[in-house]
Image (cartoon, rainbow, N blue to C red; front, side, top):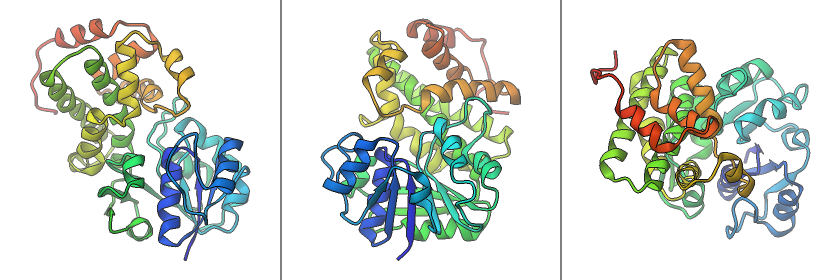
Amino acid sequence: MTVVAVLGGGSWGTTLANLLATKGERVRIWAYEPEVVEAINQRHENPVFLPGIPLASTIRAFADPREAVADAPVIVSAAPSHAVRSVVKQLEGTVTAGTLVISATKGIETDTLALMSAVFEECLPEVRFSVLSGPSFALEVCQGQPTLVVAAARDKSSALDAQRLFATPAFRVYSHDDVVGVELAGALKNVIAIAAGILDGLGMGHNPRAALITRGLAEITRLGIALGASPLTFAGLAGMGDLILTTTGDLSRNRALGVALAQGQSLSEYRAAHRSVAEGANTSKAGAQLGARMGVELPIIEKVGEVLFSGKPAREGIAELMAREPKSEQWR
């Protein structure tokens, strides 16, 4: 039995907490929302972010992240990317050296363009870091649907420890050593999913969706290679697997945002009506800036950002992508 602290009471953080508690681990979860803390402790449910799913009665919820992580040898970070740094800074002086941190956040910091591994390296350099990612809708994991993900770390022992911790008969975890590639794939696939939702919202067919997924994967791979990632990572679960799921699945928050945009809703209107975070919105801006910094063309990601933040009509963005100068399909 291991004490595990989960940071973030959204749908994914709650799902991972429940998976671990069901395995018999001692799980503490920190949630930003007081009503989520109360509901988990009193009624063993999260009606805000995971309605209708009964949670293990052994999960304890906390309003203070320092209480949740005290003396815990493992921390699972599942807060939204824009909140991770502020949450982690509260833990300085509380987390002991050698603690295993497993990041389940899929995003890029908009101010620094840092991946979550870089945030932890800066704020808590004494911890062991791993990232958990792959094609995994929270609801389906809760339902016991067979799910395959990867746990990546720069040192093999951390990847294997994360693999062993999360593995169940229905939740298969592969180890990996490409932290940057796994993190980048998990973040940028959300942007492509918004684009896929736009296509669906505009009533477009299978041809454009197939082209989008393929060229979106090319963009993600190009940037990954520029940042030192292995190109093979993007053909695996964290890359192609998660991209296919998020661009086609009805449970995808980012795809749903794209559909809403295509139907005339603004980003601010969508955010006002949904408490769950669609990470791809901010990641479109951060991803485009990171591509510019690295000298890598990311036309789809850039157009999604223009639709989200500059008021560009979705159909106009698609027309501009189709009218680009003819290119070779080779990535180099």
